[in-house]
Amino acid sequence: MITLIYSSFLKKSLFTFKHFLLSILKKNQITYVLQPVITTHKYITLLKSPHINKRAKENFQSTLYKFILKIVLNKTQLRLFFLNLPKFIHLKTILKI
Image (cartoon, rainbow, N blue to C red):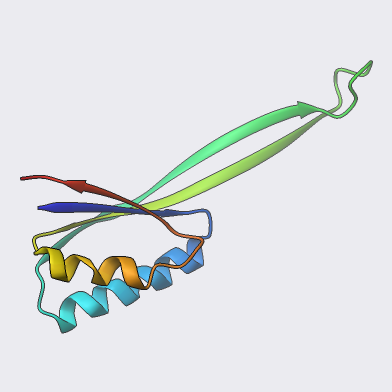
C-alpha cells in the first residue's frame, strides 16, 4: 500500500488537481481510499515598529491544505502520479509493505 500526501497553500489548485487524479484512477481502474481534506493554520504576529509603540502589531495567517490518497499499485503505475505534478503542489510518499 502506498500513501500519497498532497499539500498546497492554494486551495482551488489543489482541489482541481485532486479531481484530475481521481479521473486518472477511475480511467485505469485502480482502487483507492481518499481521506478528507486536512487544513492547518499558522498565525504569526509581528510588531510594526521595532522601537517604541508595542501595541501596534500586524497579524498574518498561513493556511496549508492537504488530502491523503491511499493506493495499491505497482511501480510502473506509480509514475503516473509524479509526471503531471504542478510546481505549487508538494507530494510526500509513504510506502508500506
